[in-house]
Each structure stands twice: as structure tokens, then as C-alpha cells.
Image: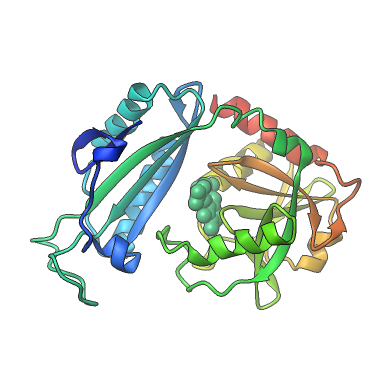
Length: 281
Ligand code: PDD
């Protein structure tokens, strides 16, 4: 696999970053995951805009312009022959060669930028989406700037492991009694023709897939209610699903051991998944 590091395309085993990089020492960095369908980037502009916002919130400059970033994404897709898959991008603050809590001088410190591809045939025709996901709920103990897509993913990783140990697929996080989001996706429930999902705030990541899916849902006359919901309300819903760049629309069929409806992916989630993939191809 060819990867990109700080202006260079290299074989993955020749790519290196400093041990003093604050991304490594302090999780001081941000990332994006963009999907590829039929060799084409899905919603590149949305991801590029959110990257700029995340960097801005952390007082980091953007090491590449939108055009340069697009060029690197396209070149990696080409070099690695990706038809279906993901592109991971990470920008960390870099370092001035030592460890210190205060940010180093931004004038003399250059951020580290890394991109690599993940080949995922079957991203669109995903057997897991035909089964639907079984999820558990866990307490949301993350920090309170979840709108910034930082690389601090230890708690979401632990949540995923808790789900695995419970023989489930994923976890939804709950704060003050209400669902925030999934470990790596936004969360939704469906009642009749109505889709309910938490409103945007600093409590959740502003999903790029969320924006597109809600737009497509409105276009086919589904109703959308942006408000908090509880696990009990979700267990009582007709359907549930999640959205993310890596799984598009993923139906949820079980929450904390309670089966939703017939225990198979519901019509709204299935339809939104179809529409999303068709529109993004
Ligand atoms: N995760 N919420 C969280 C906590 C996420 O990590 C993600 C994405 C989302 C969905 O955002 P989007 O639709 O822009 O992918 C919501 C990516 C896919 C990841 O960490 O791999």
C-alpha cells in the first residue's frame, strides 16, 4: 500500500513520524474518514469543510488547501486501485522536539499530515446491513467537545470492546439519560414515517453522512424530528439505525437485549441506505 506523509507518497513500511509528535504523545490531532464508491470520493467537500473546522477549533492551521487535499485523496485512490473503501486522513500538531503541555509555537512547528487507504470491497453490498446491528448502551464519559473530530478514540474503542464481549456489534452512548451517538456513528430511531435524531451541538459529532441522509429523507417526504431520545424510547421504536462514512446507513435490530419490531432491518432504514448509496455513486 502506498501512503502519504507530509508531502511524500511512500510504501507504508517506509513512512515515519516523530516520537515527539503531539498526536502520538497527547492525542493532539484530528482526522477524517471519507468513503470511496466506484473509485470516487463520497462527499469530499463535507469532509474537507469539517476538517477545517476541527483544525480551527484547536488553533491548528490547515497544512493543505482544499485542492491539494483533493489531489492527495485522488492520487491515493489511483495508486492503490481502490474501487470501494475508505481514506483515512489525520493531521496532528507535530512537535518542537520535546514534551510540553503548552502548544509549541505554531510558526516554527509544522503539523504532521498522514493519509492512507483501506480497501473494503463489499462496503455498499454489506452483509452486516442485511442482518442489522445489535447494540448495547453504555454511559457517555467522553469530553464535552465531541463536535471536534479528534483522534482521542480510547473510550469509543473500549465501548466497541464492551459490545463485542456482550456478543453485540456496537454501543450507543448515553448522557443524562439520553442517547448521544454511537461509538463511531450517529444514532436514529424511527416511529412511523418520522425519523428522530439528536440535534447538533457540542455533544455529538456533526456527521457528514447525517447531513446527506436527512436531506434525502426530506426529499422523499419523511418527517424529521431533531430531539433527544432515551434507550427506552428507542427500544419501543419501530426501527433504529446509525449513519457514518464507513457504514453508510446501518439498521439496528436490537438494543440492550430488546428486539425492535420483527428483529430484521426496517423499511425506512433499508430505503435510506439504498437511496444514500444510489445518490452517492
Ligand atoms: N466515525 N459520531 C462519531 C463519534 C463518529 O466517530 C463518526 C464517524 C460519526 C459519523 O460521522 P460521518 O457521517 O461524518 O462519518 C458520528 C468515523 C467513520 C470513524 O471514526 O471511523
